[in-house]
Length: 151
Picture 1 (tube, rainbow, N blue to C red):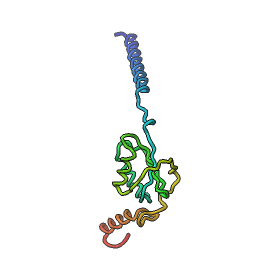
Picture 2: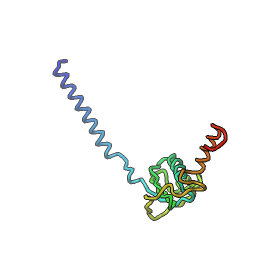
Picture 3: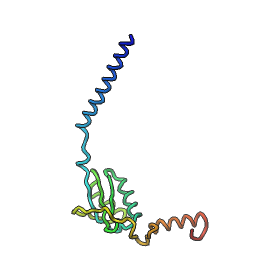
Picture 4: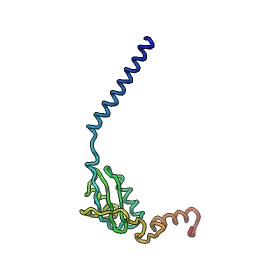
């Protein structure tokens, strides 16, 4: 094969690759499902959600579910806005929240949950340093490691 033929063959193969990439890209634009149409935002009134530790527990459980997208909370009002996609729906979210000890009901009117302070109030002994359960766990660990007494 001559140098000229080898060069022509490279251009031909490169052209095929480019055409193939363009064809796949154009095919993909028409056949890609639109997730924007299926995403839903639902606002819930949640009982007992009052500190960052509560919100952390809720977030970790919800993000185990397929279809979970985002969580926004206003702890002062006890509101939780959840962005989700199928198969996750309102009923399954309420069930998950109830199972972890946060009874909830959906709020039909759109509510702005942004702007709430996520650490102002505490649940059963929480303060500005965090949840008392967490603080007690750290105290117990310190006691086991270093003997009796507070850190």
